[in-house]
Amino acid sequence: MSHSRLTLPTPFTIRAVQTDNYRTKTFVLDGALEAVPGQFVMAWLPRFDEKPFSLVNADPITLMITDVGPFSHLVHQLQPDDRLWLRGPFGHGFTLDPAHRHLALVGGGYGVAPLLWLARTAPNAQCTVIVGARTAADLLYLDRFAALAAQSPHLEIIATTEDASHGVPGRVTDALAPRVAAGEVDALYACGPHGMLAALQTLAATHHLPCQLSWEAYMRCGIGICGACEHDGRVLCLDGPVLAYAA
Ligand SMILES: Cc1cc2nc3c(=O)[nH]c(=O)nc-3n(C[C@H](O)[C@H](O)[C@H](O)COP(=O)(O)OP(=O)(O)OC[C@H]3O[C@@H](n4cnc5c(N)ncnc54)[C@H](O)[C@@H]3O)c2cc1C
Ligand code: FES
Image (cartoon, rainbow, N blue to C red; front, side):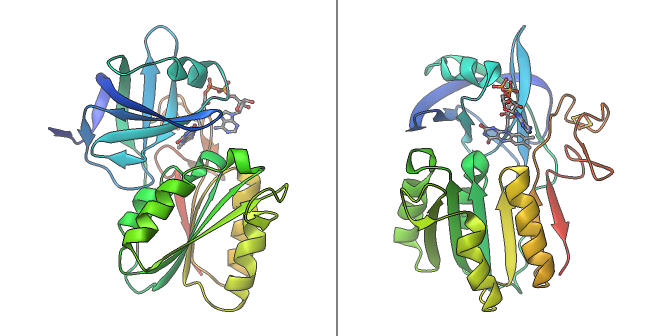
């Protein structure tokens, strides 16, 4: 059964745990949600805490979780057959415009989480996927994008690392800017840390490029009440996390 919107934390059983890098794991759960790429769920561990995570996939529910603090560290201890409680899906995800023929999908760190699903929903557009991280060890999902590219001639994958240990040396903007300047990109979709998104927003505005950016914020309620996720006068759990900017 596929759930449309879970308003209360609902238990799911972990079916598989995959190790992505030294601090990131992907959890596949035993259920499905009606959702679109870019939407997120609130994951809850009873008597501990609740945190937002992008959906990597909705059927089966799949989450990629990087161990950065107390909650994510505890989730990393979970094994197949353990339970994780979810509310959601919440927020606005990415929207594709069929008029845009060449898309740039840019992910920084665990920001790549919703982009694999987005790439799968755009099989007829030319997609340039740029995956960025500080070092080669921090890069995520290159193998999954490569597997998708093997089935899709429209998908190009570029990795960037700030320490030049893999792919294009520098930041995602270093790989993207020349393509945007050459008029090779019709629309930009991105998810990652604030600094990266701010740089992409400036690049897109300079070149009159429509963009959709998935912003991070601290979230508590997930439903527009508490104000924890305010960003530029909007609440990201409801109005975002994906905000669209016209050309
Ligand atoms: C819409 C949305 C989708 C997300 N998707 C994912 C995902 O797919 N995978 C994933 O691993 N994480 C994702 N996150 C981030 C995740 O919710 C946080 O990393 C979470 O706080 C981890 O909890 P923690 O207790 O382990 O660490 P915390 O103690 O909460 O945080 C550890 C460190 O990370 C910093 N930090 C944590 N959250 C944020 C934030 N929102 N903005 C800025 N700095 C922060 C803190 O300052 C601290 O230094 C998402 C966040 C949002 C809002
Ligand atoms: S998390 Fe409460 S308003 Fe967004």
